[in-house]
Length: 626
Image 1: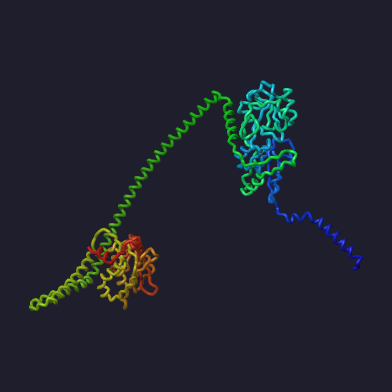
Image 2: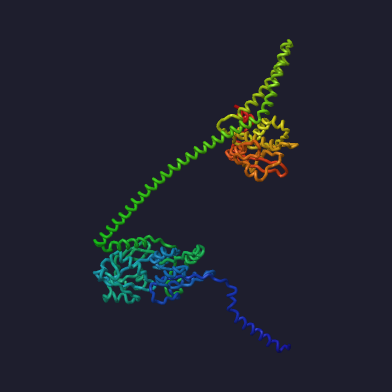
């Protein structure tokens, strides 16, 4: 490329770059700037027909301050009271600016909450209260009090600074004045008409927002007017005719969070001295929300006056109310009588049902006691039957200590006859005699305790001690049948609450059944096992090496009068099952995997005794003897 053509190419490239920059420049802020959150502010207007513009209005400073915040953008809409209410109902507004009277109504209906109160500049001071002022001509002697306005023509000065008509209505009601009934109300929108209408007698009085005329009229014009019922409050530097109420409120909707509210309050509270200089009209400022005591008091007085002015009820309506009240009272009395009567019948039925239920409970308790007595009788008979079957074994067991006693006594007699006075030999023989006598006495005591007849007596006992007692009791029978007995007893088992005699009876029945089931076996063996089961139960099992039990008989083995023996009564296992169930346990049977069967029963663990007092074998032995 030549040097002459190069400047032309550079110029063309720069020109195209400028065109592209102009085309895409409007979109650059949209790419880079963050999206602002938009809020809608509804501003109450008292002139539904006026076209309100935010520019050059007293609200412009407020909205400009809010829109300076980088994260939010605020839109404004001017609405009359009815449309403001509808917008809140539809959640179309995030904030509202309204007068104090309409705020109280919206607060109850829509849960709006005031944040700030408007202030106006008056004589260099920001005032957060407003009131009504009534003016008339100085030479008008007919209007000296507010009540003199009855039958008169009143003008209301309305513009951007005017107050709520609701405020005017409540104020007049307190003084027995009602618009349209005894007061004619006109509306003026121009300041220059006020003095001329008063001078020409077109109106008798003028009502404005307090302090408004002082701002708009010159001193000469004001001197021709007179304030009716002048009042001075310490919260306002101007004279007024009504009570002072808070200025307009800046309020939030119910769904606006506290963080946004705090940011808005911070923005609007911070005053700047020259904020209102560049605007044609004075701008509103804000302060912290004011209390509404005077406003609520005005509402209360108005309601009292409305109640007092309501016409008294006619005699016909009074009689009708009396008759209706009488009929309602009679109806309630009839219902009460019917209720009391039905309650009495229900109480009688309940009493009868209670008596029959108590009788049935007594009958069941009596039947249960009879069943327990019958069971105890059957158990006693079973024990006697068991002793009868074991008579030969017991006789052999008693014969041994008695024969030994006889031998020792005869030996002592021979020593004495032979004049061989050996004191040590005689003392030793007598000691052996005493031991054999104790042995025979122990056998007799156990026999008497086992076959005795009496009430069930439960005590804390060690299951292993019961096993040792019973196996010692059946030692001769096990020896005669050549049965190999193995004891697999778990140590440190917790005690159980049981009737020792009844549990011994169950264990004797199980051992006797096991011995008989192994009749004809070459090497009969029985194993007694005790262990803890599920941390809540103690289990005892008697395992034999017999032929086992067929499946059809295994389901019926605990039924009364069912037996697999040729000469059995079928009551042993049934009574044993009843005894274990009375101890809150369970007796069950099953076949071993290889040969033989096992009978097991469980008893609940008594944890209290484990932590409080250990059970010793000496304690159990003393409880087992009479």
